[in-house]
Amino acid sequence: MTTEEKQVLRQKIIAMMKQVRKDIEQLEELTQPISPDNAIGRVSRMDAINNKSVNEANLRRSKVKMGRLKTALSKIDEPNFGRCSSCGRSIQPARLMLMPESSRCVRCAR
Image 1 (spheres, rainbow, N blue to C red):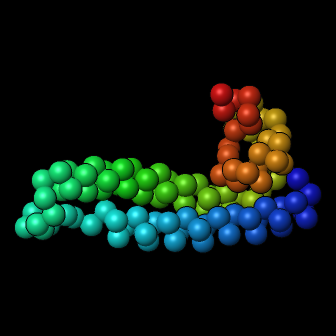
Image 2 (cartoon, rainbow, N blue to C red; image 1 turned 90 degrees about the vertical axis):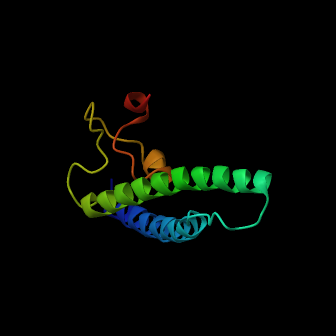
Image 3 (cartoon, one colour; image 1 turned 45 degrees about the vertical axis):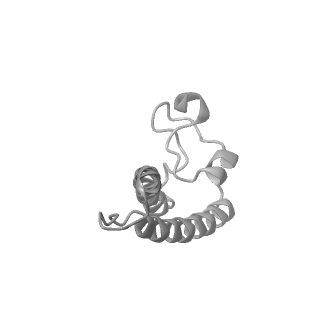
């Protein structure tokens, strides 16, 4: 990757981190415990519990993504950044722009 491509990618990672941070904050609010004395009805309560479970799964995924984005940002200036961790080939720049946290090329990711 060229220095210019890395700079564009760095900006993209920072923007993605801001969005993921915002998503995490929203999901943390949505995953607050549901009070048992909340009189919302049995069916509505079951739906709220189900939604909470879905939001908890999304929260876990968002936290994992944030960690991977932080790792990518910290390694962007290393000489082996953009190389597949499995086969050692270059990861396509388009893939890195779409998923900067990628550590494997498309072929190895399958």
